[in-house]
Length: 418
Image 1 (cartoon, rainbow, N blue to C red):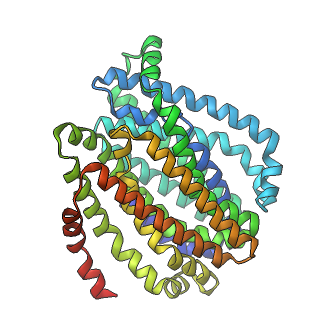
Image 2: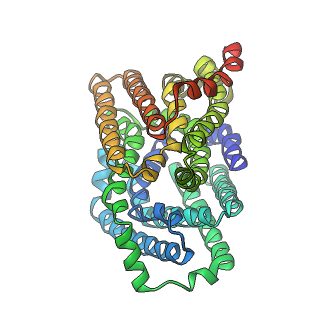
């Protein structure tokens, strides 16, 4: 996973010279729309795959997730046919409209990956997940660079490379699952699918709305910046996302998929507090230093690496650095809500997050001040994720003393650097 993300970051200075901020802006809008609908592509049944004691029950949940994903892709195709032009115009990017036809294909690749991801997590096949990430990065980067050098296709090169990378990597992961786990998959039946759908019905009833709100909240900055400002402003923000939030999100997601089944076991053994605080400490040791560097010299660093025309991306990163850190620290341990049966509380948090995040961006947009919008958004979301992390610690039984011990071992080197 680290290699896959490092590859994307290493080629970013080349991509910023092949594609304009406007191109990155249109690309970011496409991936933002995909990110919102992808989280509900399987109705969150994919999360339940790791929970049953029997692999046969989990296999039925896997097939249920796949069937729902294809159904959602058909629905997305109908919506694209009806609303692609109004949506593109609303976001201030008419050039996005023809690329929305590929959204159902992207949704299938993303949704199937989510289902295969949790199945592989259950089977402890983390290597093939890493291979999938590397495959996606290599195909995506090669296509984006090749089309950028040869064809100069504008945002189409970025979008097309992303689609090809997703599809190729997901097909490869599917082949690995069929090769290694086909004996388990023979236990699938229509009765078994219906039984598991009913048994884990709380996931679509509660998790789907929390996940949808969380995804919308995460993508809201890009969508609202597109509505209030130019695609170039979206491009500056998107570069920051690509460099920091995306790698941290992938690492955090990898931690989360391992944390989830271990948290369920730790709950039964009465050691959930120790697992939560040790995971938090490891995340802090990974994320604190790079985010501190960006907070101190972000604009200068971005301008030096990507060119003077991209300095504003570094300014945005500096404003968002506290939020990025606390999101990275708390999101990977959020499965605690599912493990403890606190889905309603998780939904309430995401509703609050969505309303406050949108309010912050709308205020900045109405004043026609992009930096004000980013500042308000970063401040509010930072405070919300502070509360979110504290709530997870409180539910898990982590004491203040244990929290301080975890933090105090990581802070001194970073403080010395600053």
